[in-house]
Each structure stands twice: as C-alpha cells, then as structure tokens.
Image (cartoon, rainbow over all chains, first blue to last red; front, top):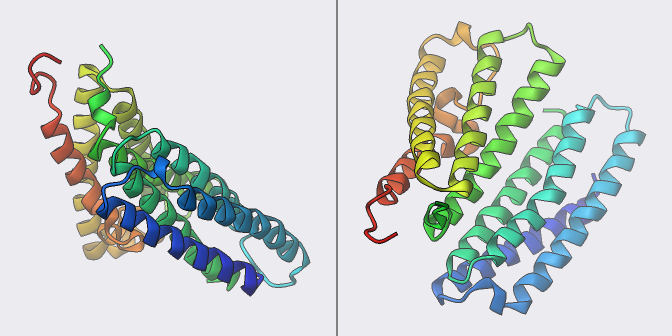
Length: 121
Length: 136
C-alpha cells in the first residue's frame, strides 16, 4: 500500500474530525462550512486514489493478502464518506457535525484494518 | 404517520452509528459464510443475526412511526441481550467460538461499540416513545 496515500487519508481524516468537533462545539450546522466540505472532497479524492493504487498493488503483490476483504474495505471506505456527508447535510443543527465525526472515524478505523489486512494479519 | 423524530437530533447520529455496524456485520458474515461456512457455524450464524438486527434497527430509525418504533425496541433489546450473552460465552466457552463474531468479547474488536450501541438505542427509543410528545 502506498504510504503517501495512506498518510494523506489519515491527515485529511483527522482534519475533518477536528473541524467537525469545532462545528459541534460552536453549534454550527455543517451546511455553513465550505471548509468542511472542501476537506471532505479532498479526503474522498484521496480515498479514490487509494482504491485504485491499492487494487493495483494487490494485483502486483506475491504475498498472501486476503484480496476480497481488502478490496471490500477499499470500496466501503470510498462509499462511507459521501453517504455520511449527505446524511449530515440534511441536518440543520449541530448534529450534522457529529454525523460527520462518526463517518470520518469510521474511515480512519477502516484505514487501520486496511493496514493490518495488507500486512497479512 | 411518519414520525421524523426517530431520526432527528441524537437519532441522526444513532442512525449513522447503526448504519456503520449494519454494513460491518453484514460484510463480515457474508464473507465468513461465503469463504469457510463450516469453520465456525455458531459464530457465523451469530454474525448474521447481528447483521440482520443492525439493518433492522437502522431501517426502523430512518422510517419512523409507531410500528417502526416497536420493532426497533425489540431489535435493540435482542441486540443488547445478544452482545452480553455472546460476550460472556466467548470468554467462558472459547471452544464454541473458533472464529470471532461482532459480539465476541463484548465487541472488543470494534472498540466495544457493539456493547454501547443497543443501550444508547434503547435510551433514545425511550425518549421518543410514541405519545411521549403530545400533539405529534
């Protein structure tokens, strides 16, 4: 797995998480934060790159990696964020920030699993 | 009548949490049953049951209304009993569980969220009991 893509996903994920917490604390609806959706868009782009580069790496590796699980995680990763973002966007209160937080923590948890699956654990 | 209260406010976060576990448990059980169904039939059946309950609870919270509320209470109650029973059993009778389920060791592999989720769900359902808000 490409460490730079992984790093970008983790850094952007943490940035989204921090901003989501700030929005909840300040009682701001997510729809008022262009910065949040900019970061979410960048994160989604990084996840798309990860799906492609991860699949290519999987096809090229000689090691015993659980391929189906690995790709399933990559795809889930990519789908979770937009679904969560839309679910958050529909809300007009601070709750949307909490939804974004749950979503992005899920993505980060999936990253941990991806790393361990790639390592063959 | 459609009652949006079930999936608004804290309910909206709860739906997100339940949706995550619906996908996680469904994915896990499908993969386990598809690859090695004979390895741990009990654990895999329980994974499947967990998946069904998570999907059911998520759906009910989104749909809303009195009937969905009742189904959600049953789903969360079974889920709470399941995670406690399986959590305890997986520690005591390790030979019954050659492979893990979502509920093994009280959901330790998932940050103990499977243990927390049904109780948060029941708390939320208690707060949104049909008739609890006069005039709605």
